[in-house]
Image 1: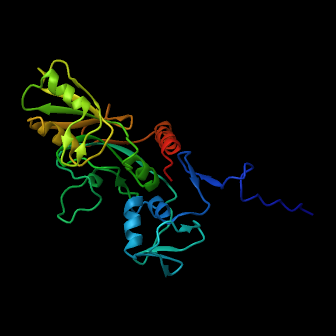
Image 2: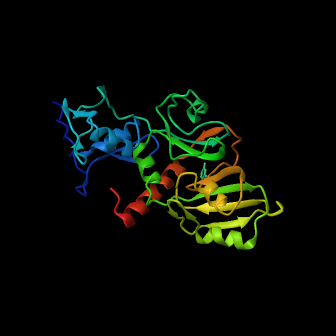
Length: 276
Ligand code: URA
């Protein structure tokens, strides 16, 4: 007679919640998770957007409408619907780095039928852009269906590093460059200190600017407040991911190492900021 196989315990030896391993080697929770996190992890939208959908009464758990934020669900057990459509966790998480060209807008859907960045990447998964770039800004843009990672990377307190190459209409002085690094007063507050330098061989017409915030049109507004017009804006690096080797409009999958690095960044931040 065959010996009965012992059932595996539902918890790990450390007593922590069980985790499943995604294809890229990223550890994903399978115990009870917050409803907004579950919806975001499905790739439908960001956690913030999920909170809005919950508050507006569009979300049901096992047939019951919930409007309270913070409710937890068990993936694979609870049935979650948004506007009547069942939400399932996407088995495969996809991470793409795009070198965005001009004239594409950074949104998943556009009512005016303009070209969106999603027209440039494979349509095999429900991807969405992490953060925004203006229509005429080019450069590094991360797209993923990992709503949880996107939530943390775009969280205002997260301070992910973004580097821009800015072409100006007239030469910049050393004093103006210094002002940029100290922070600029904008209508929605002063920008945090950053780093800025003149790009060699550009006759003081091109500047590299490194910032850690994501205010709307921040870079253009910073230069406009100093009397400049931005002629060209390119983001050459986002959270350590650079466009090196990618022509405009080209994309590539992130490597497992790059995905791990992003998770590492998130983890470090969570430890210092107590973000859930
Ligand atoms: N700052 C801007 O002004 N525009 C962008 O697209 C990104 C940052």
